[in-house]
Length: 127
Image 1 (spheres, rainbow, N blue to C red):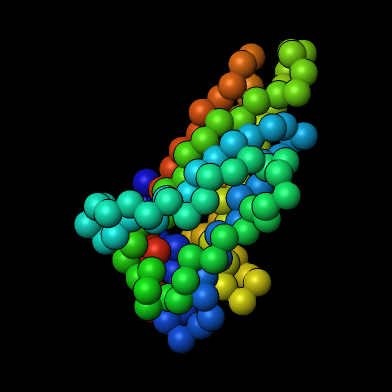
Image 2 (image 1 turned 60 degrees about the vertical axis):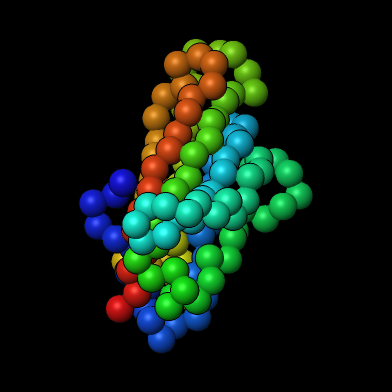
C-alpha cells in the first residue's frame, strides 16, 4: 500500500478514481473498496481499457470513503511480441476534476514478454 493516504476534502464533492493504461497496451483491471479495517470488499468495477465503459469510477462522498482502502489489480500485455515493450499504469484519485494530494500513483515499467500483473492500494483520508 502507498505510504501516504490520498487526501480528500471532507467538504468537497464525490471522489473519483481514474485508471489509465498507457504505452498503447491492453489491460484488464479491477477496483475494490475495502472498509477501514481492510475487510468487507466491495468490487467497484472490473473492466478493460478498450471497452466502452469509462475508466473513471465514482467512489462516493468523502465522508462515505473516509479511511477506506482503494485497491487495484489487473494485468497489462502488449498487442505485439516485439522486444522493448513498455507499459504505464496510472491511478488518479480526484475531486472536482483535480488530482488530490498523494492521489497520483504511477506504475511504469518494461513488459518482459507475456502479461505483467499490477496491483496496489491507497488509503483515502478526508480532512
